[in-house]
Length: 469
Image 1 (cartoon, rainbow, N blue to C red):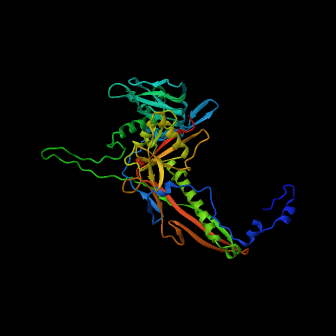
Image 2 (spheres, helix red, strand yellow):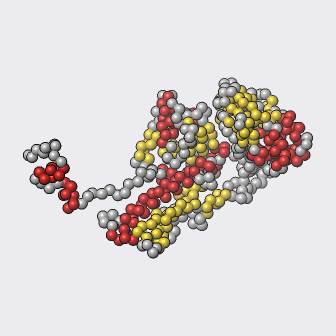
Image 3 (cartoon, rainbow, N blue to C red):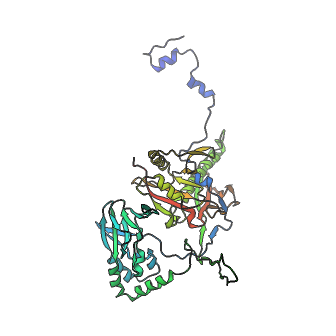
């Protein structure tokens, strides 16, 4: 064995060496290579588990039974310093004002709302007291509390920013509160007293007439979902006259057009000609480009304002956490709002928060095997991770629950297979030519969309705090 003097320079060591060095030997050897790696590839559970429907004409129309839309949206506010004011046109989100278009009267009505601040735990309205005010929640969370079967209190639901209660006061009918509203957090509300509304009605005949017509229109027969009722008789004796009926449809059903994610892939002809062994350069470039397009596709299907799941959940299917973190009660509330929930979709950090909150109560969520991967479940329903669901700067996120498939009136993915130059289902690669510099261009396009067939197929638990320990 030759002992090398540690004080020698590299040149002197090279002079003393008695065999071929590894660095020189590599000139005569090949290397074992991996294909190009990409950190941005995720499991893309939504794309994998959503049933895909062939959309041959590029547009999918969702026909539904006629629903009486009474204005169940959310109200938007503007603030100047500590002063908060409702945007007049946003008052049309209230059921009684949905079709009222006189902007001058709406502005006068907005001016009559009074701002109040409510401390945490304070009661805003009380069960059984006269209902004589309309409340708009500008900031904070409010619990609606009712009486249980045995006289104990039970939380009916939680309201938050932009929601309201007491809208029935607009009709001028004298009623009583059917619940107690209590501030879960410090709350800012805008309040319209009934006396202010009556004073305005005295100077606005159009508003008074509109509200009277609305009160009469609410008597139209409808089921609990707001759909036009189908008259049916049952349990009768003898030969009574049977009711006649028909199933009414929406006159203007929603149509979903396929969206597209595109990019132009460029590869120099010299690279594709000379450097294709052992791996095809164009093939590897295309593989990574398709991965990026599929990642964008899932992001858009969750976040796009036109058709994304987070923005297209029905407002009645958007619920809020009772205290902030995702407790077992919140998960049960989300799960119970639809039949046959296929899966939840949540950010991995949100799934961790669900586990923490369950562990605090001595609950340990089970796991199940989905496509060879162990995932957490709640009540047997898989909670699939997706890093496409955003986390806000305040550390809040959302949890999506959905029923899927056309047969179950659920959520479906839309695509079109068999398109020209198809590389994957509903994704094609089209040769665009070679320019004067010898660069080959390919147009890579993915076509897709997502549709919610009926409102209760999709639900969202919003404002989930994931950083509270």
